[in-house]
Image (cartoon, rainbow over all chains, first blue to last red; front, side, top):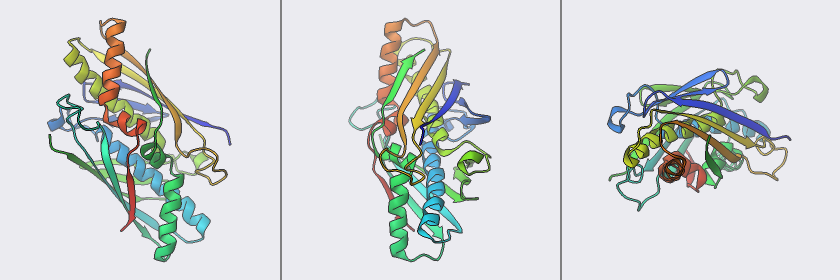
Length: 144
Length: 144
């Protein structure tokens, strides 16, 4: 299959608020007041978790279909811990981003536990967002 | 500094559409029609790029302030390539997610090129989302 290219274009509405255009959609990214923003939208690291949830939903349905069971729906809860010390320049002992991300999937279906354990393994292996978080991906940042 | 925990809760509105709750915000994730969705929102991998843009804006302003130049604003364009073969189960030769992500930053400021090259290096080093994409992060997926 041919590669797909995805693009966004963004500008700062303030030091904490970013207006992002993805095709015909607008995404507002902001920070809560205690992180210096105007709290007009989820913050960047919350969007990372939302991306993962969206991808796991799609992959969950694709893989359930392949495995031959009906997935009537799925609930996905995700949490992650990060230490803001590097972000604020207070300490460089810890990494900047999430140290770990935990996902709880609650599928609405009649499959047995062994089938669902296999389902999760395949979903994780083929989910683009899970791959980009779990593994290394080159990010090249250049000045225009 | 103490760790911060971020959380989202999501449910499938359809096999391609996910409704995500992050604090008091709702995020709609969907796929375009050609990827099997109802095109009611950006897709998961577009949100990954939006997260990165939002994080680079915040960090860009934090670091400019530390370096002593005025950043009046910044434009951020991001693109990434991925091959959908693994996602669709057609081939396992390539990874599932983005193979590379390219970011073009257009800062509105009077700093010289050497200062801005240093600025980008520090921003990249301290940006949580850039860290989570560039480096490995454990993602634990469990059944509820």
